[in-house]
Length: 464
Image (tube, rainbow, N blue to C red):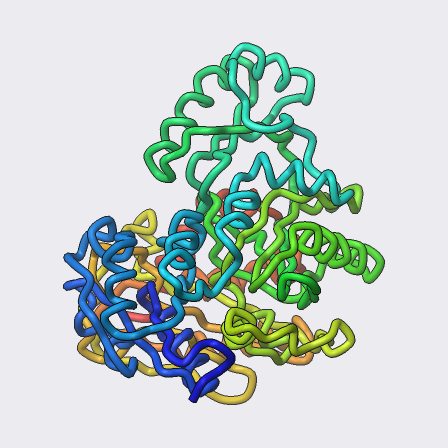
């Protein structure tokens, strides 16, 4: 079967997102090709796909980041489209360009759009043009460090030094003084250069006790709709661990303005595909500020799907195949409350040390309002070469209190033997009065972790 211009889709990724894309493509009647490295030959995605093709050794640079190997795999299998998932090459403008130059369909925005919105300094400028509020900071990438330090003084410390390219919390430092700024800025630039090939940095004022709110958008190159907002304030080292939709912090007036601003920004760049526009929300003032746009599907997209009832991955594939938006804004109603926790192969009682290994008994939670997106099966050897994400446990209920209770029940049912996972962290978090009351912000989790290590160890012990 053919959906628009797509009859066979190659998935240029691995893990749980590869499984997720295969399922969405299958629902659309599209054949799938799964690429894999030597380390992933026994992965669940490889077992599920219609066709598979090896693209190299375990090292990502020689497989999942090898553009020519992926394009060759598409040519050899007759694929006419490529879905990049998240991470790896998903926000690489050169990859999107190369896919298009090869006469294939890139499931996502154009290379030019990725280039524009992927450069955080340029994206800030674009947001300003669309009248979207931005955090006080530098106008574009900073050059002279002494001049930048003077600007930081004018903005007021603390300031955040951020990589202009990339994401995932890398290339970021917080400076509390001019002396710290001059020391940390070169570090941030070097880290960004190593991670993303671009050492450009810019600065923003730190919003104390800010919440991280993001709006899911979907565009067809002309029209854009939003699928309401998510809150992702629970972060460790700027990596999200727990997401909710909607945010319990926003009133309807702020929510409407926030979502409208996201649509305005996406329309201003003729956005095509699924994307997320991220903001900081100041609890004290009720103000929100644009920080960046992710030009791909995100890890946390299932909480949005749970409250809105749409398959976002299927929609982005349909748009890439030539379809116009299949939903109007009036069709997108948010219902109930959803929570997602990220299950990683890490030991939260031992500084989150990675814990690859072989999966023993696997019991997945079930029942109304429970979803477990994962890549696991008994006997699967989790490779040590990649991100430690194993899957996501997502729950939905009529309101937040009921969703928290359902999450507790689902975590109790979840069993993944043979690995240390982050499950005890979430069980411990559910006992926090602040979390249950929604009194969290982006700098809340790390101090809580320091003060609750024994609680996490107790949960870990009860699960063993």
